[in-house]
Length: 302
Image (tube, rainbow, N blue to C red; front, side, top):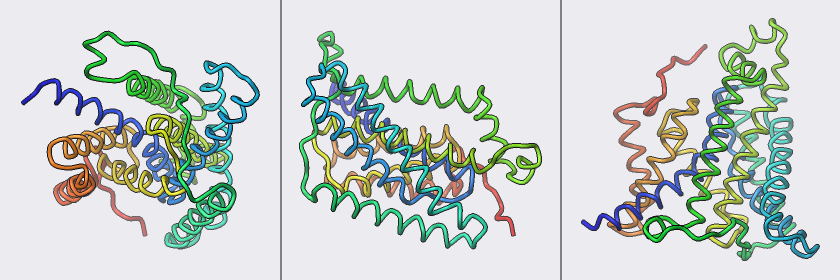
């Protein structure tokens, strides 16, 4: 085997896994807090990419330097997507929080369809060329043979985002409130925690991370479309289930395993079958460990 080729596939898989992780964290955080899946999350990812596209275009026309466009586009995408996440929680989940579990799931699917068609009408059904926002720079020759500058920036930004999320959850007041709410909402309210605010904040944070992933992969691939949220959302949900839905480390681990599986399947078999390998891996994991790799088996409360 060619070690360089294996290394290239490995870093390609890490890049895919990084994007999946940014999206999967939103799924697993929401599930950990309210025990439900946000099926509109993939559309939030898509909206983040479109927001970055619009922001970058406007800034470029206004004459902003290229070095300033990237961080400003990131800010615009994350803030705007966070606002959409807040709205989804307010409209699709909060009114149905005490309804049968099937009701908010159907509501979220409906919200997903609404958001996709809203962007379809507001923008275009065609693919749009996305500008190269990620800064480019020269790497040492041996490093450049294994990983490109864009992939390296994606890995570094993802690592920084995950480190920031870990710090927020472990050491901040909001993070402690999120952990308390995830354990027992009723007791958290009795202790003075504003559960509604905590749940909304969870949706906002997850949506901002998904938007960051949308911007990064769109800049890497070079195009966007209203349909990109569907397949990315399904893959990220698969990664979250693979690692253990509700577990943040599990979502990250599952994302990287899924990304590496797809990269090596595409490299050694065919890119046409990478989805087959990814979902086959999920089936095997769920057969032998239904709660996921790092998930804990729990009994359904009646």
